[in-house]
Image (cartoon, rainbow, N blue to C red):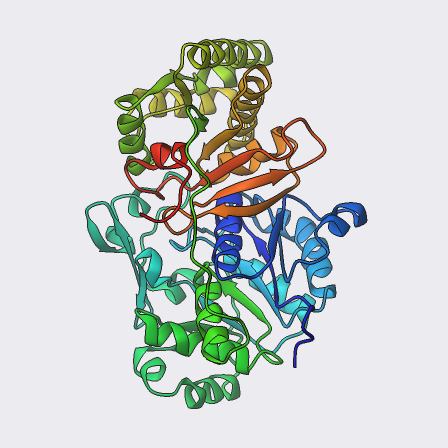
Length: 453
């Protein structure tokens, strides 16, 4: 039995937007949840002593196994020591990963070593987000329908982690030699316990779980919770929390979710985007037609030299502040989709600069965060959006925000939150959005305060 005020779950996210999505699921189920941007100090942790769900966000998705070996054990060990029955390593619901970038297999190896659990369930599907796994194959929704992941219009062509394989265990085989097993739809529809027993007896250390609907989601949550002593380290998307919440409500561990509310409309927000997703391109186009001033940030020029980076930042801040004072909502972007010539120019600049993609992404993300900081500091705007999973992590740190709590829902995975930190932006309302996430009018929805509709 979990004590009434002990943590129910802890999680470590491999990017910031995904980490915030976990917090959103838990918070809107009525669970006091907080997300930290790094391992919290005792004083910061004391500020959120009532939390029953505690997470730490990272940029692990953009790093390789050597970085993981150096940087994952400490925060995973910290979270494990909090004593929650479940420690979740949060990955993207589109399984963004490759051997040299965001290696999920290596992360699971590290997590199993720290927690000393028998095996790790791998639950990537999240039906609420139109992510479905059937017989080991992952499908994901987009504006244009549902696609097998290796035929998805975004993920099949991702610039860093293109998905050439939709069978997740086949994809994972390039990242780890741990023995794996699939608990398929037939098992999840009936009773997955016999399949679990068989898999563990065969020595499986990673257990991929199919899920396509409320019934299989509930079965996954029950399987994980009932076997938490042996399966207490879990990898997966926020589908893990959706499944657990559904099961916790079924058994009366938590009350039915309260009705979500809007945070209320404001006249203006400020936004930055480092995403090259086609989805973000459509969102930027909508914003341009609906009261947002689109301001370009030349990411290629920012890689040339520190001086040119500083000039680009200063120019964007100046233009953003001017737009705000003219009554517009400034939206600073590095590109307006994958076919934007800026994407090709950035690739060429990256090759000339002779730096790693990780460092280049950090440079651009930090620059956009610095721009957002400058605009917010010089205006009265107190609501913001950061678009792009990698951009969000670096942007949060540029704003010196140390913690987030969910405030109002939007589309699953992109809630409006409140940011906390020892900075002028303490209390800032902010949404972190993955590139492929959100409705076409997402920026307007945040301006309106989020909430159901």
